[in-house]
Image 1: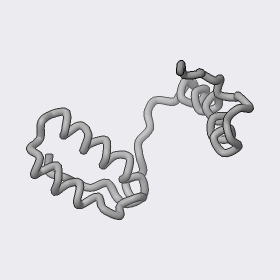
Image 2: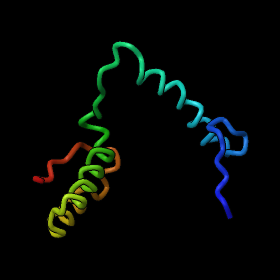
Image 3: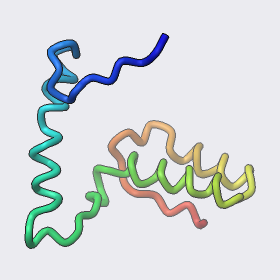
Image 4: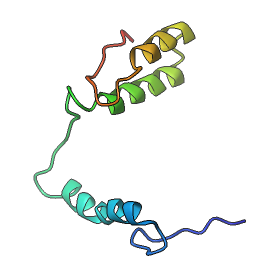
Length: 88
């Protein structure tokens, strides 16, 4: 079966994704606004995003499995925790 690509504002999506997707054009305008130069994650509450991205980078870069496993263990229950220094 071929996937059906829906526009972001399609009424075929359930309510919650429709609400989330409705923000995309507004966010894109903000990201392309004159004067917007950069953004960063909050160091104390957005660790999940940063930590897991760096763990993925470590996998791609070939960091030894034991080091990645140790870092992954540190991330247990760190849903909205701090950004962690893995040492790699």
